[in-house]
Image (cartoon, rainbow over all chains, first blue to last red; front, side, top):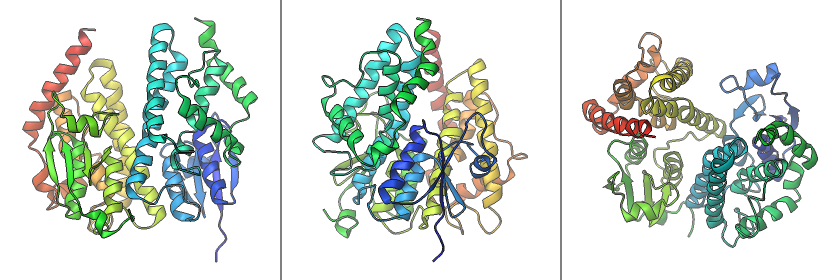
Length: 222
Length: 238
């Protein structure tokens, strides 16, 4: 049997490449991690993802796969133990629907929050809280979106952590607060407690510092 | 409920749609490709049905597929559901790497072709110029991929002589691209710089289950002209 060679091109602070780390670790797949400098992308990255020139890229036995949700599906279909997606087609559709929702709606709202000011920012915060309320509707009483263990949607929802760190860096009130979003609040704590998942988040201090530098100027100009 | 069993395939299939929506058309193509019987419900954009609003409360949009009473929204999610529930005539390839490539290109088409096309249709001036430029760049990449994958023996991205996922996701360009050009007042399609793409479009339009579904361009132009005027009218009044 040929040796499996798995490489992951990512950055320490990208939620998208961190998703892939979680998926690979859940499956127990050995991989080589390559930290990219996005201001100076490596020839290897540009060769493996010429279309978008972005991380994450998974390279499996020399063949590259790009786009985090596409990579996650590839991982699930290639290493079939410890499934990430549910078996039932309808439940799979729900996981994909909500992952898309997060990548499109949630990401757009989160980006706006850090640059908006005053009333506009308040509007974006209301919007994102409503989105998280919608996500709670999908989680319901479950421990994780995936049920008893982490699944596709839990991994995709890792971006929520970036919102929490961002809001802290900006000295904002808690957007994901226990009062307004008790179900998601509980989920987040379970997620951060999970043995595999917690290895795959940026170190908090470093993350906060980066966000303060990146977005902090928006406070200064208020 | 056992997954993938024959019993799951039974049961009513309903599709909520608009005649003018390229997203709805994709789902219809997937259903027809598999030979799945379904009830089609034409929704009213200005008066959405209770069924639509309760089936897709998050986005309140079509298409929505309702199978055995379970609603699914988002065209690409629906197509994957269809492919996993009805195993005949596979839409996605079998091999995981090929599937990843198909999904990658579907995402690319959505983000770099369809989205800029929609934004170009509903904007004007500098904003429209920006979107048309993005659209042209996206089309360049599509032409490159068509050049790499298609030839006289392989007419479609699905391989062999059959359509597949990428063809179904890209298929809206066959009708809607000319419509968007005419209504938006710009040019993106160019047979000279996009020869392989134009060959693909011509072949796709002739596929027997696709051909009868294509709406006449005049009808689409009339409709979208009205929507564009409406949207831009709103913008001007802000």
